[in-house]
Image 1 (cartoon, rainbow, N blue to C red):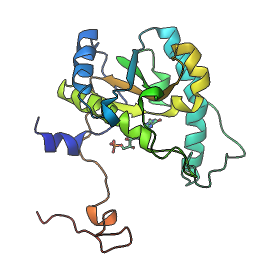
Image 2: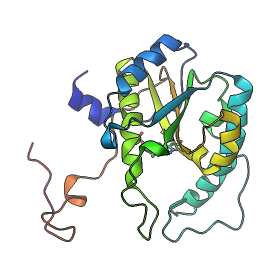
Image 3: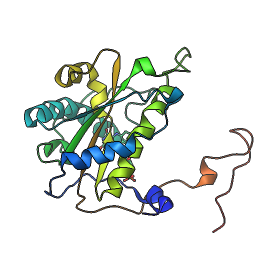
Length: 221
Ligand SMILES: Cc1cc2nc3c(=O)[nH]c(=O)nc-3n(C[C@H](O)[C@H](O)[C@H](O)COP(=O)(O)O)c2cc1C
């Protein structure tokens, strides 16, 4: 697949056909993903391929309340879980439907992705806000994985709702000490691969010289 086409069309897939995906394919995808960059080439990624059904259901039980709260805020027009002015809603309706969690038994591939914090230089750890730069050493790996999955005819979604309950999930997954649970990735053969993605144009987020500078215009076609 043409690289630019792949970059522009790798939409989220949450419904999968029943066709199984073998461990060999998963290994081939991870074999591509490992070429991701990371700070100091620390390669902090660890991957658990979660096959055990009761374990999957245990993870889904942890994710469900996170999804319930997320959707409650979204339905009220808010931005869930932002660190800037987020307030927990007064009432949260439980057990809202979620295609991934409701069908976690039959999702062809469930991957828990962790990052070894001892291998990450967290350049902004001492600032007066939550650190961000460490994610740059693990999320390129996750996105390489998603692009490689597409190359292998698969689709899926990278999620972070399990990270909200990392302490509980750590016990279930045997997360090593000083590791962060950064993503749960669901993959399979897409029922439908979305390719028309809704994204803001260049001039809405890029400016010249300073962030308050003149907008950089979208390329002329
Ligand atoms: C860092 C990150 C966290 C995400 N977390 C979740 C999640 O917890 N649950 C979920 O269903 N989707 C999650 N997503 C998927 C986003 O909702 C999706 O990428 C976004 O809506 C754009 O969808 P599209 O590519 O189909 O247009 C996450 C995506 C990213 C990059």
